[in-house]
Image (cartoon, rainbow, N blue to C red; front, side, top):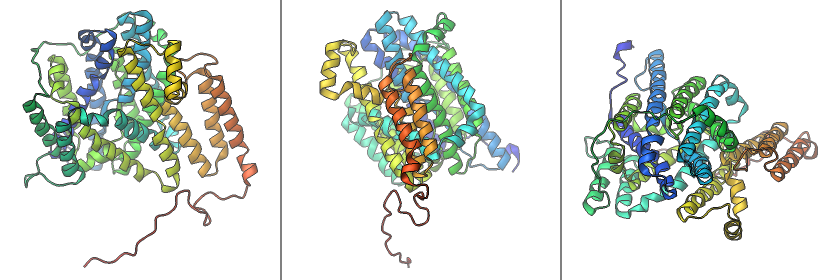
Amino acid sequence: MATEKIRWWSLGRGDMDSTVAQVGFNLAQSMIPVILLAPLGIPMAFSLKNLLPGYALGFLIGSFGLVHLAIKLARREGRQNVTAHVYGNNVPGIIAFTLAIIVPVYMQTHDVNRAWAIGAAAVVWTGIFKLIAAPFAGAIRRFIPVPASMTVFAAAMYSYLALVLLQRVFDQPVVGIVALMIVAVTVLGNVPITRWKIPPFLVAWLVPLGIGLSIGYVHPVWQGMSLTAPFSITQEPLRAMIYALPYMSVILPMAIYQILQDIAAAEGGAAAGDNYDARSLLLADGLGTLVCGLAGCVITPVIYALLPPYKALGARIGYAFWTAVIYMAVVVSGLTIFIGQLFPWPILSAMIAYVAVGVGVATLRRVQPKYYTALLLGLVLPTGAVVAAAVGSALPALHLSAANPEIQAALNRSIYWSSVQGLGNGFLFLVLVIAAIITESIDRRFNRAALWCAIAAVFSWFGLLHSPLMRWGAQPQYAIGWVAAAVILFTARWWAGEALPPPHAQGAPSAVPAMKQEPQTSAK
């Protein structure tokens, strides 16, 4: 196929749907730090001017990198149906950096500029870790079992994202239920809207939006246009990088998760027929993330492992280009708040339902049934992080602090707060460790499983797991527990028997009972 015939910038039906969804997701989700910080007394005007604009620049750089990779793949293989990877802000990272870094720094110093600077430095560190990991993406992909990497991806995008955001369908039941039913019938049910096949996400946005406007739920306030630079440089950025070091317990696990999600995105793309180089994907994301932080943004972007459902929707390359351009235009024109009001959460949550289902389906297709035990446990573990995030955001709004001994005692009596924190801090790395241990144990590779326990012990000791802050001897009890687990797994082959075959080998029973097959009859 001739190079000039590949119209990568065009917007087909699927690209229009994907552009609507991606612009809405990125605008609405970028407002999360503003909403979480407002109860502390941090003015929304300050957040909108300083914390957010830099995301537009980093998002543009990362998106253009992914578009470039998609064009190269399309030209190399001579295909029009190549889909660009999905790029956007990372909700777990937004919540973690806001509640576990910016909020504590502001509560301790009451210096909003320092809190902002350290938050942006956390994004810079994340970008640096991604760029360091990029050349080793292939090795990381080989070392981490596919079921473990896919479980981390599902835990973040299926469990955590759904638990945090999906309930917001009912912020306004009429608007949310209408949006959810349109998505359920047209997208999940694959029922076309009229014979012209109108883009379903466009309908799922405009119809509920019209209802919201008519009942007064959505009432956008025009604040005029004002040119805004897509960056805001923090004071003393190098010193902020040093101040951010104690928060590596938040930054490093989140960076590891995002690296794994980029790799999982490569896995998902390959399964859908678009085989991208994981190193190139990490490089594009790393550059975008680094630019976000240097431009003063406290939001980390990431590659969503959503290429299969977006490809099934009909998305190609154009949506990735136009989403970034439209988002930049909205930010530069100063219309972020106004446009954001046109994407209320009940509508976006209905679209997130499709995203969650797509993630779940993609994960099940990539994980063999014998590893479902690892997957199912991994999907449950984010519950602790969800509870911790909910309590962490509610207490400042009530002018309370979890550092207060009386508050801590009450939380421990009611919701076992210390256990919730242990489960929530670095939860995505915990999901990775647990899923990897179970996967390696199923395959009878006990030494590798023990190695994962040893890594978890080191992370616990240094406060990179189960701890809100990085320091020497942060969580000794957790470290001892993981060392004991490593000993058990290291000796497992001895006490289990050398000749014990792995599941599904030599007629061994499956880890998951097989479904009874019904006799098939040929259709007439």
